[in-house]
Length: 137
Image (spheres, rainbow, N blue to C red):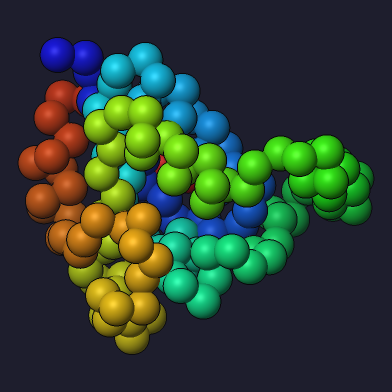
């Protein structure tokens, strides 16, 4: 079996989420199992209210970064959410919300976009990570 790739998603800015989506899609296309664990602001971006909204860019992007991202979107680049939806069709991908972050943000499972497969604790995340690499975004 191919190595599992595990992402812990803490940031909820569109540029970091786009990187997550592209890396996840590439791994899924290569037959790697992908686990995504959503925490804090990364989790907030996966709510029904925020998944298709503007989530801003990280501070280091600056105005040049904003212009570049806008140009790519205008040229037809898929959003991070659409890229992840497509990646889930390519291969084995599991997206889980952190139960502690759910409590912190006062979220219910019904608040989450259907792309999220469920809610789990950090122990379950580590158990599902196998011996795969863990990447923090």
